[in-house]
Image (tube, rainbow, N blue to C red; front, side, top):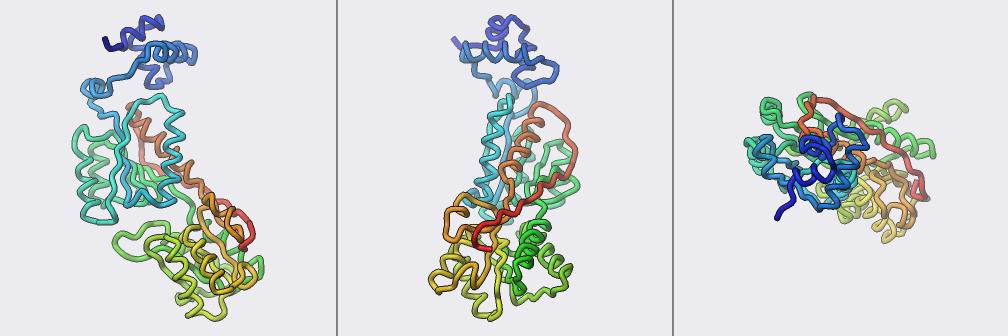
Length: 337
């Protein structure tokens, strides 16, 4: 016979309402009572019936996560933050994953389908932004929309200060005597262009201008897929077009920067003696390669944890308002610059 919330209440010596509040981490419940309830839950091996609860509350007890791809370092680090935060919340929920494969038509279909009543209680979008019409629809329906690395005044937005990312990189290179800095970056124009590349390009240009240097578009290489092979090709392109380059700021991330290091080794170019190099992300491999990569650390797991906290609050029935939360990056100096 299945264990019910009534059984848990009897074991804990409280009402079934108190058990429900404790399971939802309601602030009206003291820590002592919550611990008593959780002990009873564990002893009885009670598993909440999320479907039945949804019929009563009108909620699906689910969070939708939408992105173009789940295979990149960025997405995996954010998901790590989700995973860590799941251990800290008492809210019961399911997580459903949706990928657009970078197709605008599929993106619209996914965001439209999630507007259906009872489909989800919160939507987290990673590096992808619904159209303004869809954003307004989410506001009207009351489904919280949480954007990671995008901005809208009609949604909850969590992002990195990308302007500062570029500022930290460029100022460090200039401080070490570099003057001719090439830029490797993601696509900055186009329909499905993300916010990060545009903000990092603006930060790069602004910082050069502040230091009395001009931006040369011919010293910029854009990449599509953020992979090692694109880093190799980027270095070949830079060396073909720019004879005086003495530094590369790889705003496209550490994985692309590792491709630059690999191609430099093949071409017998010394990093940092011939060309200094700075990446972005501070992935685990950045400290293990030779030379160890100087990079800009992004607290992506903290961003993921913050996004999940907002989504869990929505499931608990808390009212969420549009806001923009911005995390600061950190310069990590190693051997490459």
